[in-house]
Image (cartoon, rainbow over all chains, first blue to last red; front, top):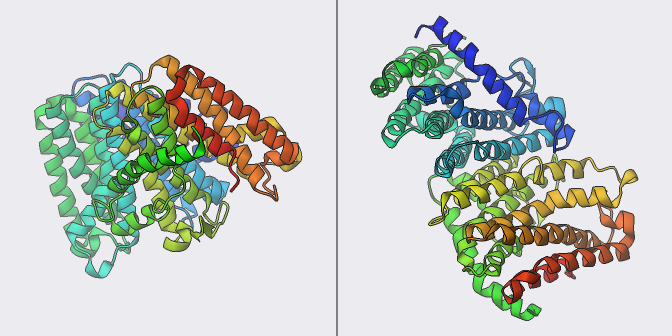
Length: 282
Length: 282
């Protein structure tokens, strides 16, 4: 699937995601309006919605309708957003801008930013557990993936090691370990959880996990390479330079695509998303 | 069950909770040791473990073994601990001491305190979803209770309204609404979720929910009354004075105990925990 076709695919499917995110995060609802505003700040407008797209494309790869993975798509986007809000806090990366707009703590105050993040994490679980028409064991499986990806072995553990990263003893393995947890875990959750909600069997899930693990690390290495200064402590550029980083990202992309072979044409959106994610120029 | 007997009951059951918390939070494990230390800081030693005790007592009220509610007991304690860590942060209540020891951000730094709280929330879900030998629909039900209690309609929403509370227009209803979310929601989750894991039917769960909702608010009003200054903006003392607060707490306790009548002698631990929680003198 060429990039133009992928754009058409996304244009047809992402409005569903926006609608589901709106339904999950009403401006006025059963929670304080001030909290709702802080929770919505970084969700609308969002970024590229890559993680939700991966969840939907994964459902299609096993021959199911994309909409069956919608609760997973929403849940991973809420977790991703909460982690960005907390990463931006003054006590962490202390960023004032995100996607060209004030970060949540700048716009709503630090207390509300902490609480909005906390609430988005809980809401992600609530949305996923409320997935309509899915059998309980599939919901449990997908929710367990989410809990692991979000927790100390996933995003949070990756962030701790990233903050502590000592560039003087950086090696490819330790950098990829941070990338796998900080970025890869949620990719895996989107892809594997999305397919499980859509009825995927164990063999399909294993292959999709192989794909998503490699893609997560490749995506983050590509991210490192786009950061021209490469001044992050935990950057692949430090150990391999721009060319080495690009080669490693391509090698992982190749492995990710290999894992998709048995799915045939149905996995074209997953393939196109992987190429787009790793070969970004912006 | 007189208080002395309750102490014996707790002495027999709480070691199980400590053991399960230790198993959930190893010093060395699959996550960064620095994160593990920050996550453990406020869990060990903990407080009275009232919420875990409620979960176990609730399983016994429906005639089941207390241990069947153990995953719920651990999950509510982890959520409770995370919420205390974040409430203590400089941008919220800015407390340096908790239970006579340095708060997590004082001992481990602010970034680690935010991340430890985030990780404890995710871990609570992971522990509950891994409940062994429970059918998936019961696990889903209990986890959904946890997500609601922890989220914007529960603890976080209550904390936002508490931070924003305007004492000049305080009334009993708005104070009880904050108490119901900030404190009551997790009591309900412990009791109802614990009973559901242990095999409770819909009728039992409805009665247990009535009990726990009332107990949560009564417990927090008793807490207000123990704060002799009553200088919290959102304190029942403001609208009813010490005597009015004590009367309201007793009335709610009475209603809570009424809801337990159909359970007979099996609910004695739940009754004794309610009396102890509402009639504290420390």
